[in-house]
Length: 411
Image 1 (tube, rainbow, N blue to C red):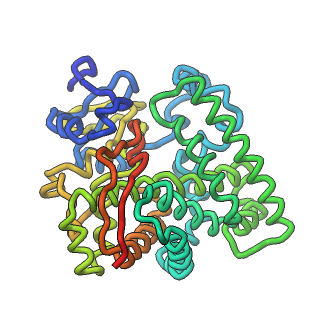
Image 2 (image 1 turned 90 degrees about the vertical axis):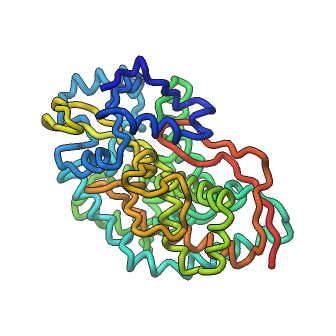
Image 3 (image 1 turned 45 degrees about the vertical axis):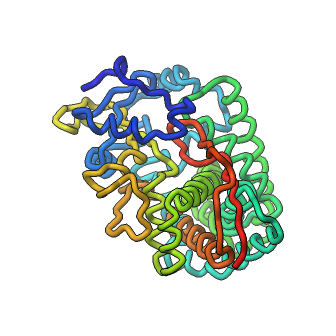
């Protein structure tokens, strides 16, 4: 069991952002799990260990199952996770960070709109929006794939599902990114103030939108959630928290995997040619994009009882860090794991998590990507990288390019 003193781990460094996979490989080569003192967490890097943890019903995301109020308050203060009134109410508590009956109750209220059948009904609308977006870029021989294209799709689509006007969606992306950034390991007071201020602004916006829908219900998720609150299936804070989470989740991670997926096709041009020759491979290619660069590479769990993992017993209350980004590159699970394979089957990657917290929006994210990449390859016969170096975001909990300049020419 290797201590952090001999662990060269700098997840905020440019080197880690550029390529975290050599570090992940070194972690997987160690016996058992590795303790990372700076984050007070045992890191699980192998696919079998990560799967074991996230599928265990005795593993939870909330401290409430293993600690009392005073201990939780002390831990929050130690992590600079305190004195954030709105962030505490609507972000630190959410569907994502709840467990058991509370999690099941909240998930049930919104799940019905994210089933494959319901998401499939959105295909024509998403295709029309993507076509319009591509039309707006006509005449340009070079774009930033992130800022000019990817960033405009996921948030608008999830916004429409919830009932957010199109013109408000760009602001929602700003709020979301400024709130989510505080989940990573850099919790400075400056980043803390940014997260709290944006949570407050987001909350006030949702209050206004909710009031409008209460007066004039529509066929959207906001109206459905208002009815759920009226029937006692969620309270006010749960309503705001769930709406906020859905909008935040619909932005960042899908934008990131769109960017890294595009970058993968540019790094493996034969796979792009393969998709052009066989468009039917796009669904498996999208799954491979999630495996190859998991957009949310790190999550945590707490054990509610003593547990044995990798030949060692860990006591109740142990915090585990599950490294999806490492598990998805584990050669014991994925042959030739560092190669992007558009036709990889089977591909039981773990980018969407497993068990009770399996990603609610996975069908929608995959549909967005299928439509965007299929349309891109149909409209442009040549797509090339237009910058020497692609810079990725820094952090342990995020993986995606900051920008991605590409050049393209139509057929």
